[in-house]
Image 1 (cartoon, one colour):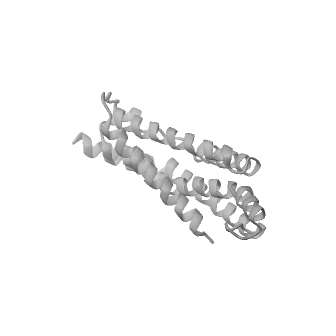
Image 2 (cartoon, rainbow, N blue to C red; image 1 turned 30 degrees about the vertical axis):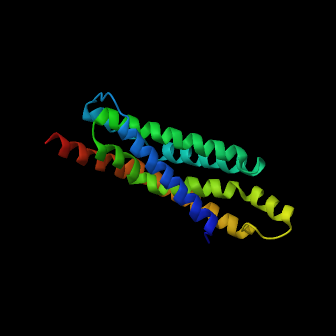
Image 3 (spheres, rainbow, N blue to C red; image 1 turned 180 degrees about the vertical axis):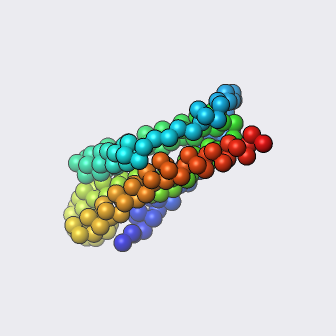
Length: 181
């Protein structure tokens, strides 16, 4: 179902995320610790899921219309916002583990789904390149495959929202309790 282009895209995104994560910790200057109660924010599943679906839909639709140009900008901006979130988590908690787990407990699944929406948004570009060169340079999904990947994306975003709303706060409480000891 997934091809080499998607796999490379996903690996590239995670490598960039790792570099950003390392840079955030290398250049953090002031740590402003917040009380543990302020570090754990519970957000409802519905709010998170609607936010994630909205973002992915915008990436998908603008990418299809713009041959991937606008969705590329959105993905870069999304990566920037993620780096700010990681930095903020570290600055306010003073804990590398907190900042890792606040993102990674749900982020792995969410990032895979968002990269999948970006991959699907490039279908018009891949189709245009194949038509331009009159040969199959890039894999283009059939409508059935496209819909299957769309379902995988929506289910992944649902799972990520469930983790973020239910599991992440519990893990963060455990981390903050162990840090306080």
